[in-house]
Image 1 (cartoon, rainbow, N blue to C red):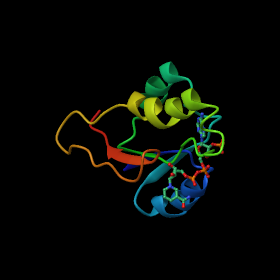
Image 2 (image 1 turned 135 degrees about the vertical axis):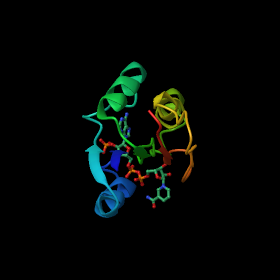
Image 3 (image 1 turned 90 degrees about the vertical axis):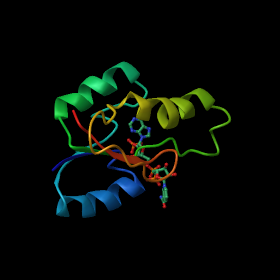
Image 4 (image 1 turned 30 degrees about the vertical axis):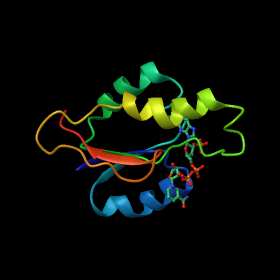
Length: 108
Ligand SMILES: NC(=O)c1ccc[n+]([C@@H]2O[C@H](COP(=O)([O-])OP(=O)(O)OC[C@H]3O[C@@H](n4cnc5c(N)ncnc54)[C@H](OP(=O)(O)O)[C@@H]3O)[C@@H](O)[C@H]2O)c1
């Protein structure tokens, strides 16, 4: 199983990076690999990896700055996950975690 881990340098990402290899082959992305503020680039970059599963551990977590940067927070936590490919066939999707962290299987 090919697992794409987005946000691999964060706290959650690091924990997942230590455990996910037990269940699949992990491609670990940092912001340098995929900047979630660049909506148009997300889908082609993800599809190029042909993952079976995406684990998104990236998030805007600067809660003290969120009121000053609402658009950036919405982009990273709200818009960017929606730019990833959606499961389209059997297998469906299972959402895990809170607003900034989700996991779902792909049928691409
Ligand atoms: N930590 C916990 O105990 C915990 C528990 C339950 C749920 N969560 C949830 O899990 C999520 C992650 O939390 P965390 O504690 O791991 O946060 P974190 O340590 O702040 O990590 C956030 C990650 O998001 C990445 N990121 C931010 N902006 C990005 C962008 N524009 N493009 C690509 N990547 C970007 C960061 O990359 P850079 O390193 O390059 O900045 C970083 O790796 C949040 O939604 C949080 O609410 C966390």
